[in-house]
Image (cartoon, rainbow, N blue to C red):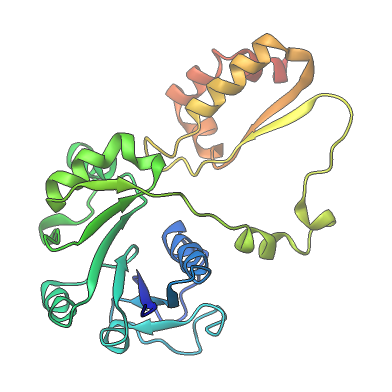
Length: 258
């Protein structure tokens, strides 16, 4: 059986763009590394769908994570997984004509983002929305299925299926390598410190729900929890009266200042 050559799309915005500025490109890397371990896969490369050139300016190891333009990939992939960059109708036609397969890999809350764009005047795709109608399959990670599956299926006109979420600590380990104990938690006696790590940029990536989970744990066993720390929330804690009022309803919040 012929082994598959797989491309996974990303969308670069400038020649020296980092892998660190969003999770989409990191998801593409995780998927590529996982696929390379499959016995029926010959290769898995990152495919940039924008006009940004692929050069040595890219700040990642191109031998470890091969990255090519769509022009260089279009005749050398059997399956293109559209994850972080979109191909247009002409590119789709070219791929299909030579027998390639096109997969839509969904790892974002597209339905929520679309609602926010419409209701809260948060521009995103504007009048330039293109939804490809020629996917061979739709894959979605479990975290987004319950919210966005119907949205994916109606607009892409295909049944979507859940696939495993893939993650690796490779980027985290790189950033924490210089820290004491490589940044790894060291168990200690006494009450524990809880942290909520969310960017607080939309209704999905918001700290309130996990903070309420921490609140319930604190009410049940306050003696084992020292404090709750919430990242990326200083601007809310200073400037947002609604956020301040909500947090003041939580015992875990007010106990830290009593």
